[in-house]
Length: 281
Image 1 (cartoon, rainbow, N blue to C red):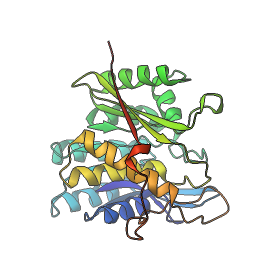
Image 2: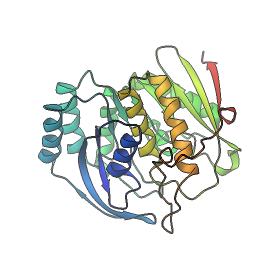
Image 3: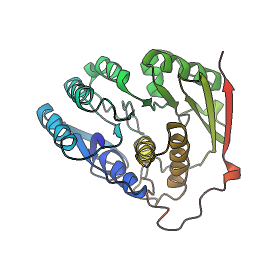
Image 4: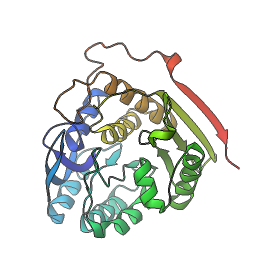
């Protein structure tokens, strides 16, 4: 199940999540929190869905469909976040929850109301995995993240603060520290280890919906029976190819190709993917 906003252009939000679920051969359900007017060039308007309708969608699904995993994206308002948290705490406590703490779009359009940050931070406490990008992690921690050592420190701090696993995404690294690889940091409180996941950096404008797609892919992999660590790596591999084979639509930040496997595209060879494991003292 995805709990997120609707993107009429089909590149992010509910639409990207459902496409990702289908690409992983799992049945997707959705709880829509807001409707947006947007395209590859930006977000122009947002209409939140009434809180009782959001809760009603969620209750209806949980009462009838055997949900195996849940991901959240844009929750937008404090009352929506609180309502979703209440239902999930009471009726979905044992279902793995992936939280993409959406605060802004790829183009930096604001996707959360000003007074909702504290509610979002409280919501993080019920997540199995949190998947912030660097700007989101900086806002949550109130601190800057400038390099890989900062990323590892931030992932550890987030994991301990919210007692959850953390996938800190490195795609938004500052230009002066960018390299030929994008490095994500995966941290778990169980082992106090970090996994450094390195993928070749793709020079492209087609990055609309990357965060939505990654978190939805992790949720789908969990639903398919993989453990969390394996799900994270499989999802990151899926995202890499979704970016590589993007259709190039629109004149701004274009959408991904969620169905590259169906087109029998040849994925990145495993030799281009790197995993490093480091102990954090």
